[in-house]
Image (tube, rainbow, N blue to C red):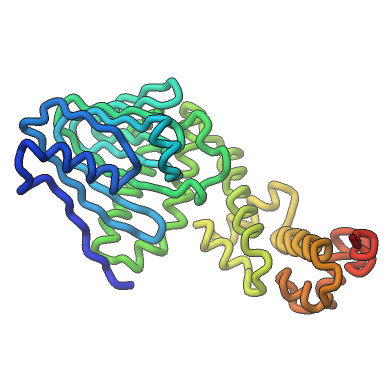
Length: 315
C-alpha cells in the first residue's frame, strides 16, 4: 500500500485579520459544517494534520481557544453522518450534546455524533486527535447515551484511546499493517461507545452481544457472495475464528446455519420479486454453489422447496 503524505493545513502565512475566517472554512472542509467563534481573533492560530486510512480519517488539531457549534440548521443543510472520537492531547475543553456535558483533560476520550447538535468549547490553546468513523460502520442505535461522556485514560477507555493513537502513528510508517488493524479499531470504538453508554459497565455478556451483532451484520451484507467463509468474516470483524464460533454459539447458532439462513432469505426475496427466474440463477445470486445446494438449504430453513415457495407466492 502506498503511503499518502500527511496533509498539513495551517493559518501560518495568513494575515492576522483573516486567520480565523480561514480557520472556520478549514474546519468545515475537514470535518462537518460548523459555526465557530474565536476567543481572540487578533491573535488566532491553528493547524490540522490530516491522515486517512481506508474509511477512517485522523486529524491532529492544534489551536487557540474557540467555541464550535453544530446546529440543527447546519445538520439539515449537510447530511454528513460520522461519529467523531476525540482524544485530548494537550489543554482542556468540553463537549455538549444531547443534554450531557463532558469535560476533556489530557488523555480523555469523548464521542460526538454529527447528526445531533453539539457544542465544543476550549478556553485556551489545546491539541486533540480526532478520528472520524462513518456511522454506517457501527451498529444502528449504538450511540444512544454514549455521546458527550468522557472516558478517563485509566481503564478500558484508555486502552481504546491508546490503540487509536498507536494506529495513527503506524499509518504514517507502515500503512499496509495499519490497514489490517482497521476492523479491530472499529470494533474497539463500538465497544467503547457501549462502555460510555453504560457509564462504566462493559460486561462480558455485553461484549459478546456486540461482537455477535457485528458478525450478523457482516454476514447479512455479504451472504450472497459465494466466497464468504469463516476466515473472511473473522478478519472483517477483527476477531479470531475461535472467538467467532464462541459468540455465535452463545447465541444458539453456528456459522454455517447463519450463512445459510441469510442466503435463503435472499433466495426468497428473489423468488417473490422474479417468479420467472431460473432456480439455477436464483441459487447463484443468493450465494449457493448450485441449484441442488439451494434446494437442500431452502428445505432445511423453510420446510418446503424453492419451487413450492414460488408457487404459493406467485403474484
